[in-house]
Image 1 (tube, one colour):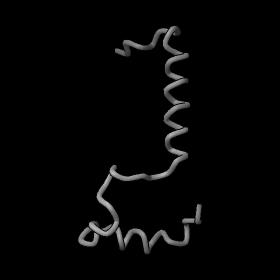
Image 2: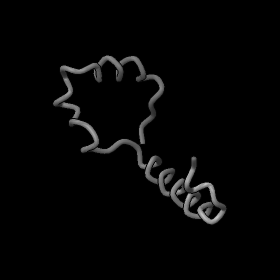
Image 3: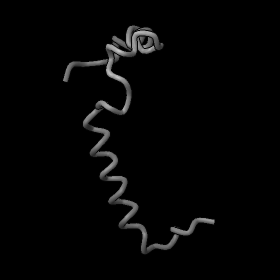
Image 4: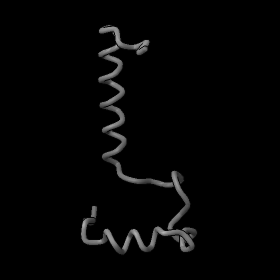
Length: 58
């Protein structure tokens, strides 16, 4: 059962979505994960190499 299904929460829901979209536009930032130099033993280098053609400089 959705406790927030009432129409009175629509504005708050829309505002929360707008804020989350704004934050996503900033792109990834640390410390949400380890710095890149500490991720050498993870799959991050392989993933970065695989997706390199999808990225663009910002």
